[in-house]
Amino acid sequence: MESEVISVRVAKEAKEALEREGIDVSHEFKDYIKRRLALIGLRKTVRRLEPIIRSMKPSKKGFAARSVREDRDAGH
Figure 1 (cartoon, rainbow, N blue to C red):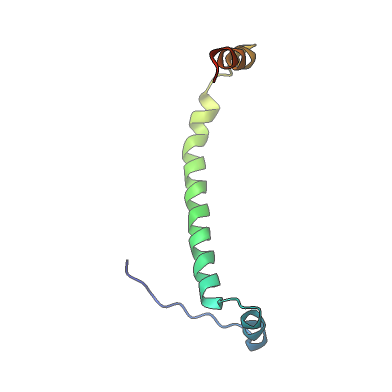
Figure 2: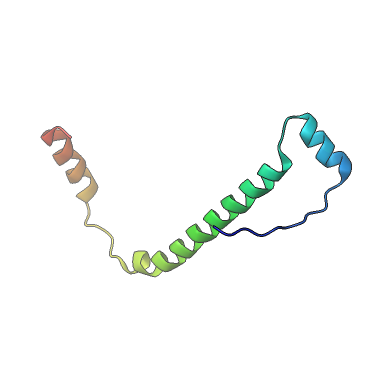
């Protein structure tokens, strides 16, 4: 995977305080970017699935109880 350099200016005191606590500042920024991208992906998936979910009809009354009972009786 290709990479790019991103420069971020952070107060020297903040960077030093994080490093004193054993925190790798570079790793933290990279990890944040990865988490943010994952969240963006989840939001896109939810937006894509939302119309499908909204169009689904509710299950019939008693369906959940019957399903649980069937699973329990079958030993699942």
